[in-house]
Image (cartoon, rainbow, N blue to C red):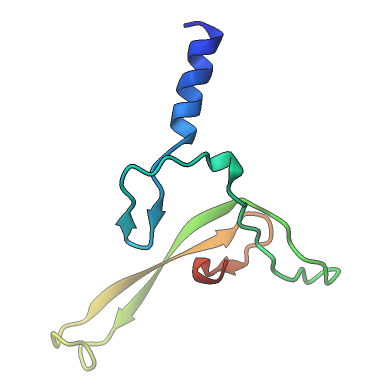
Length: 97
């Protein structure tokens, strides 16, 4: 595979469909390199500076709901999904990114 063909394939992968909320946009062709990065922005405990990391991990936390308050009357486990900064570990709410 030639260099130009490899570059073309790479560029096609970078221009992906964008997911907004729970709905996938249709036929949206966006150059992801031109979009602003989401920055952690958490205050660092050591020096009071601001974390400028751009890499996050998806994290899952489980909570147990007692059958007493569960709508089914049975014990349940719910899954909470959120992201954590890969550098400082702070959790990030993407709604306010």
